[in-house]
Length: 425
Ligand code: AMP
Ligand code: GLY
Image (cartoon, rainbow, N blue to C red; front, side, top):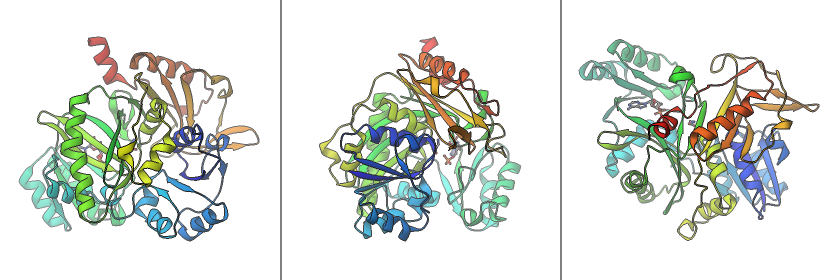
């Protein structure tokens, strides 16, 4: 099969790596890709926001399946346009991608299906939102409704912070994404992520993971796209996974099917393990980045077979097998990320890193005359297996120490929650 993969992050390098292992794959294209993906795929500078151009590319290259990595093209309706042109595509159409594109939409699905989530109000004027904040007090969580690149959520510990967040939204800090605001009850507990594949009717559980969203050690500093992850997440035990499937995932899939907008693709549930059991914090409609990197490391089944089963509506006929060993990934980012950072600095030492149970997935990199240059905020994902999370962490950081990139940094404590459990127990 000939495939086109859309995206350029560490997630897409991991997807390309998993797809490249399938005997079914004959040719992989990627748009725009990165220096790591370039080793597995032919890169194209196709403008993916120009849907007609993507359709034309697929026809010219006789693409059998398009795999969409990031959320923006999903919310922009790329899948709708490709499918309507007769091109098979992995990922949800625009209407069900509203699970990620609009927090108010997701709350509406939760209400309709009785899904456990934080209590909330939704507002399209600042006055009404501020009155709600005054009534409820703090801590409270203020969310811009639309896509805001992970920056639209403020967990306010004081009423003043909450009011400032409401005002920022309505003053246009997040553009159209902040025209409506969802204000939520603060949930206490440990967070974990859970991934499933759906074909619109069936849901196939994939795996659990835990991300590290803050920039610095000890979960300090600004929020980022994710500084490291591991899978599985021990906090999400098998009985809790069953509970999440029954009370959160299956009702979501059946509600969207009932509405005539079935969800096909990857559903990523951000969960809070509260004293009352798991509650949904948010949905994403694609793999997490960097969670995908650890999931693809652990996946033993043919990934292309699994996504074909999602596209073709036969997920009830397949199963996903996983390595039991945990995988852990450390994100190396350009100094300054998530604020401003330099591009074009050289990264050395990647060639001598090949080892069993170790993969370095590229994110923001580009190749220039044989040199690898940093080309984004998050740049590399150093990913390893171990018999324990502690062992995987050690292998990953050993590899990090052999990468020569003075302009980069990483957290030094990825995996700390799971490792604390291992050492206690
Ligand atoms: P979201 O973009 O909705 O995932 O929110 C980003 C982060 O804000 C989450 O990963 C949580 O750490 C935090 N958060 C969001 N909603 C809540 C909530 N209701 N209670 C506590 N923390 C929250
Ligand atoms: N790592 C968080 C995300 O992909 O949304």
